[in-house]
Length: 406
Image (cartoon, rainbow, N blue to C red):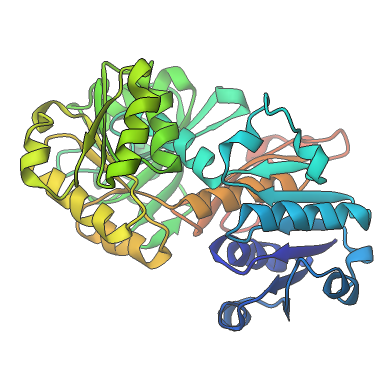
């Protein structure tokens, strides 16, 4: 399949790397020579320096023979316009990153098909749903649902007092309640797909797959202090912060939102007042302001501002003065390991989440969903098995799966 990706940022680079590894013919176009140079250094794909909005450029790179277009530049208008151009050239499938939540709303008066877009991906919207799952399941570091919510993947930290520390994977079942599968173990920066003899160590993050009704028991076994979240404090009234505040307002007892920009804070207060969200003007780095938020009652502090460094520092400040769990958003991949190294265990990168969502759509109808564990080190895939699939001919225990696959 020939795939054209417009945009060589984080999402475009992650997509190109994953698709090139699968043997797809990948072409990436971007107006930044520096971005393309970084891509070329790590990914085996064709790169084009140019403007994706140029019909002549698209003609020259073979748009008429392209099977799939993915537009993931930083600009909504560019992404939508490139899809419209590709529609003129009869490109069969077109996916676009669009930040404006209005266009991904099913009730939008102008459907995405009008722009030639087959599917819209909103990194901010995906991040909101991901964070919401974490808030609704305290005690977990990552939370992904499969099969319409009937299968739960949860990441849990092995603490010093955990009963499974030092146990082999094959023996873990004796210490934890319910029916589950140990799907992966994260140890430092590595993700391991374990065999039965693999030992679980203190500090490991264990990924468990179970039915949703078994999750609470598993979480309690890892973290007896975990309890239902009632109050959250959000820092940042941008697209993600506003969407999250709206989603959580009807589900929790109290939602507070801090915004340092005066005009944006007033707009947020006007829009969220009827939902009962408390909006405060100021910085989450202001200790006095944080003190007025009754931090001892806040279950989650969610740093979603446009400044990665302020998100980082405010989360550390909350951890010092509060008792809840910090969740930090960062757009810089190299910040993830740094933040985790100082004990900020839940770090969200919307672009990685968007890459997973795009891969699910690119791979076709047989792949129902994709989750990239801890960024990119491992993937969890949900397949639809056809009648001709080889995997339907033998019991799971007799399947000869490749090394590193469970």
